[in-house]
Length: 402
Ligand SMILES: [Zn+2]
Ligand SMILES: [Zn+2]
Image 1: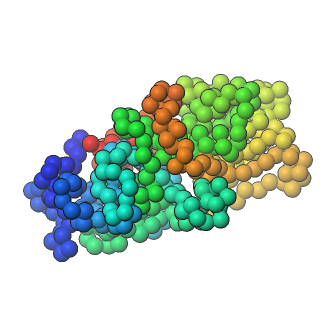
Image 2: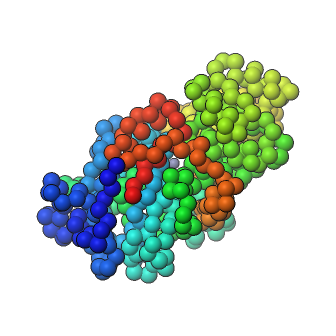
Image 3: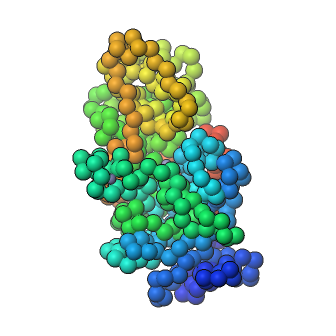
């Protein structure tokens, strides 16, 4: 696993303002990031995981990132998770623009700071894919996860090696050696955290923990069902356990998830088949659970979560689905069941406040994310990890770069 050259001779790979910028095919290292002794002004060429079109094969390519402008930083990525939303960008579930750099769940180190930036170079950070503007109506009423400024699934920035304008997943494009982002899209964390775990704080863990703590507000003694056991679902499971839920039912279509679910804190694993509602009722005195968490993002699983929930209970939709996947519920059922159906966007959290809390929990051992990491892989292995994700294998595959 060879990483980029980060030696002081880091002018290798710097893009010049001419077509001769990229060192492709040369005998020199494929890419490099800035050394720090030079003025903060030059674009850089880095390796990144790129989808050229919807459904196209993923490839690691060299891309050109601009120098950080006013209020922007360049972050050298140390670890980045492969999240289901990245897959949704590629397979057409979410509307994306191409060519697209994937990745939005990562940790790294501030490598270069543009004018006016207060964060010091060398600061370890977690990336935030929904940086709040702190000025819009939602931010002012304390709901920064709904910030009006962060609605686009992709943001234009940089270009491919052959000069095509590039788009970045959720404004980050973090499955890359580096990103250039606004300073408000990074959150400082303590040094020394395991990068493959710290990366997950930026999406799966913040989302899963927030869904339990902020959106559903699971209380001690309550019962919980979690439908869909990917990275987010497992984070929901362990957060429910930590919140004091006593019946925690893990639901997935894959029997292979059983062991992982029980290790993450489930009291029972149930296969998502036609006996599911019966099995859940058998474990909840025939009522159904107080809280069901849908962590897939499909109408069918939202309906399943709805059916598993008791009268007066709450269904929290954590998965991000497609806009044409319609959920159908009976009008009488909605009235009679008195259930609440709501979504949890980014864990209804304020990442600037909550990521440091989670990072501190990770540092002192209260939060253990080792189970969530199925394995660490090189950037070149990321396309294969997308295939495994599509097949529902494992929890989180994390690309590490060092
Ligand atoms: Zn994600
Ligand atoms: Zn805002």
